[in-house]
Image 1: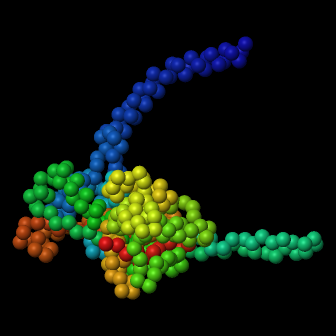
Image 2: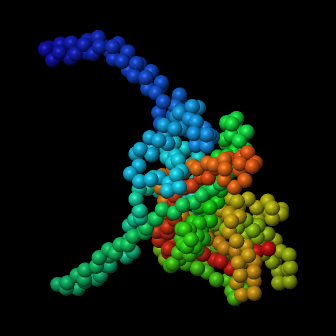
Image 3: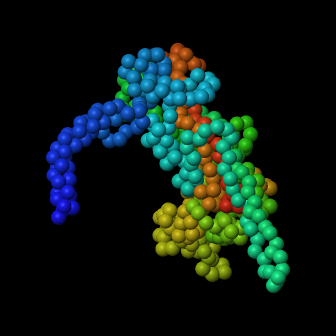
Length: 388
């Protein structure tokens, strides 16, 4: 009986305190909503970082209308133990511009294919471990010693490399600070940076500040079509590339093809002869009325995996006497690592080049990134497919 009485007494005490607790919670929620956080939009009254306001603050050294942007830049600079940009840029951390970073990744073909993006890296180089050999199993006779074997590991290194984009703005446009204008500038910057990262990830040379892309990574699988290359005549090339990964126990993960749009066009136009003297034939991807109607889904069903296109891949590679060759990549794109240090560094000048004469402001944005292939056997490249 005493236990029941104690519980009832405790519940009455809680009920008596509940209104006060609700009042205190409401006060905290009110204060929280009113607070201006540094770090992106939470759907409430959070202040959003404006690229235009930051640029105007940099150029005019007037932060009256960009106090939030100034706080973001300078608070981040105080947190850094090293200079963010040797040329005096203003570093905007990636958490302040999440939508721009997301746009950048969305427009990067290798990221669409499944590349692994590592953000906010620290130090140099950043090393990622990888297993290069596993343990070995043996059949052992009775009373015989077991042969020992060890796992073997290596490392993949990511080293900071700088990629830059330049935008030229009229000072009138900059002064108006229209949201639509800022959206256009952001889109232009994203397009330039994403194209640069994409091309470097696929075929970066590893020299002159470029990362080493898939094409120039030692140990990847390759397929050659002939002394002078060859046009696409069947789906065999795609199946052969898949087989290369399967034979290397690497046919897993986020698998996809990446090629030039002309390769997709050639796929749509593929025809199968119906008899020995048939010079036309039926489309290989039925039931299509014309080649143009072949959807990406139909192409994926035909070759077994998604096909993504990049206009940056060359169509003028030389093989023998042919000068119209292009590349096709197939791989587990999760094994392609894209590392990013920090966010964007912004530097603006109304005096660079002919900016002063034309009453313009030139804005240079830089990112620090690198690319590395974790397992070369996860990729296959054909670089002598002829296209028209």
